[in-house]
Image (cartoon, rainbow, N blue to C red; front, side):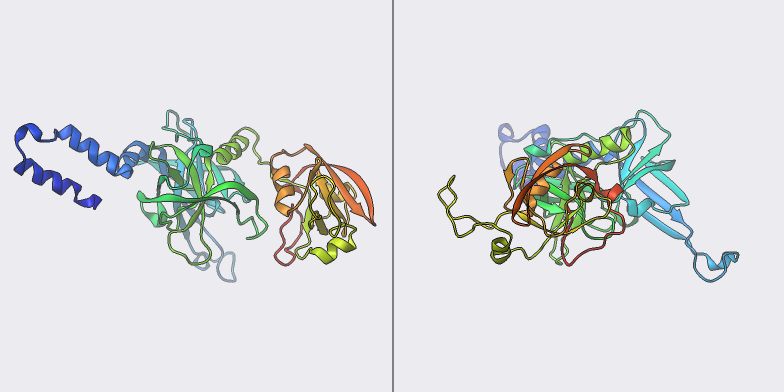
Length: 375
C-alpha cells in the first residue's frame, strides 16, 4: 500500500481544487516519514566505508615458485568509530592481509590493523585521516520490540547496500567464539528480520533517527529467512572503548565447564534437600546450583581450588538456579573483580573467593565438552 502513496497524491493534484492540494514540501515530508530508510540513508551513508584486503596464501609445494601462489581478495563493511581514523570491521575481511585499504566517499586510504577481538568478532583499523564523520551511537537500552531498523554496509564487493526490517525480539544469545563455539553471552541482544548478506558482519544497524543501535553478529543457523542476531550498541561502545584505549578487551570468566545433565538425582546425591520445604519461601526445594564438570587449567577457578564435582550453590550471596544466573553475575563484573562463591564439596559447605579472569588470555588448549560452554 505504501508504494502507491506518491501516485495517489499525484492523482489528487489533478482532481482536487488548488486550495486543497499538498505543497511539495508536505509531499516530501510525508514520503520521508513513510519510508524512514530514505532519511536514514541520506544521514548515515557518510559514516560507512568499504574495506578491501589482498592476501597471498601459499598454494602448492614450492615456497620459491611465484606461480604456486594465489591471490585472495576480501571485501566487507566498515564504519567510522572516531573522527581521527579508527574504523570497525569484521576480522574475516582483514586477517592475514598483505594489502589493506579503506575507501571513504571515493578516497582510498592505506589501513593498519590495530587489534582483533575474536570473541566479539571485531577488528579495529586505523587510517591516516582527521575530520571524518564518526557514526552516531544510540542507546540500545531504549530499543523496543517492533521498531524499524535499517542495515547498511558493503557486502560482497558492493559499495552501498541497505535492507529494512524490524526488531522482532530482545533476548540473550551467544556469539560464536574464536573456535566456532563457547563464545561470550550477549545480554539483551536483538533479533531483527532485515536481510543480511555475506560481508555484512560488524555492519551497523540504525534506528529511524539515524543512530547506530547495534551491529550485525550472525544470521540464524537454522536456515530461516531474514532472521539475524545483532549486538546492542551499548555493549559495542564498551568493547570499542577498550580496544582504542587499552588495546585489549576483557572477556570475564572463571574457567568452569558446567555439567550439562545436572538433574534431581544428582542434586540429591550432592546434598540438595529437594524433597524438603524451604523455610524462607514455604515451597519445596528446587534443583539449584551448578555442578562443575571440568575446570580449565591455569584458570581463575583452578587457582582458587575449584575441582570437578563441586556444586556451586551461590555467587555473591545469590542462589543460582541456572548456569545463566552465574554467567550474568560474572559478565556484570570486570576482569580483576572478585566474586564470592558458596560451594558444596563432599556434603560440606565451603566458601571461595575468585578473581575474575580474561577468557581469551586464560583459555589455553581447552576443547568443547559435548555442548557445554565455559563460564
